Amino acid sequence: MRKNILIIGASSGIGKALASVLTDEGHALWATYHRHEPSTQANTQWVRWDAVNEAFPDDFLPDILHAVVYCPGSIALKPFQRFTPQDFINDYQLQVVGAVKALRAAQAALKKAESAAVVLFSTVAVQTGFPFHAVVAASKGAIEGLTRALAAEWAPTVRVNAIAPSLTDTPLAAALLSNEEKKKANAQRHPLKRLGNAEEIAQAAAFLLSDAASWITGQVFHIDGGMSSLKI
Image 1: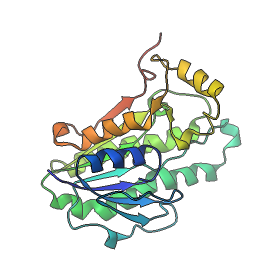
Image 2: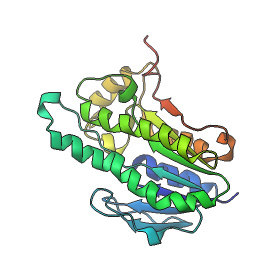
Image 3: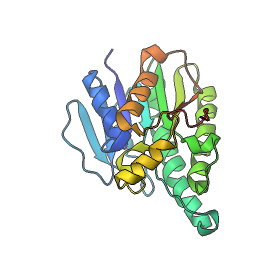
């Protein structure tokens, strides 16, 4: 079945990889970008949107949506005492309030589909505490709460799930993976001894959007190379 799918942040990283997977499957995409100019892609309508500072452009959406994916994120890492309260607010605006804006705008179109799905993104740092991750863990912890609350409220017609990756090799993580030494060191922290990549996370998201996942909702999936559950 050809689906109408909205991807927020589809021009880079996991969002870009997911857009490629979904268009290859024949779906129609409505996609947003901010800093990264999108490449031309079949069956995709683009709009520029600043999730922090702008209202969502409601007139951009089709009448019926079968899925929404919210991909924008940030990785701000430093000691807690160096974060200000405003740092927490700024990160929450991007990672949580931005998602709320998109989902509020899309809700009516999602409800018109017989069966719809939402995928949000958390992080391994919510359930597994890491130093210097206070800001990102706080925002993504809110995303996990939002995932479960909306899954309950929007059932049975809209499924809502989240993916919690560990560090993946994407432009968002470029500062942490800026050379081979850093990449090797971060890879060794994972039981599988390598970093994840955007395509692997995108495939997991595509599955959660598909009819094959029609009995899955309210879940947070740890796609993290074993980081959250294994010690070896």
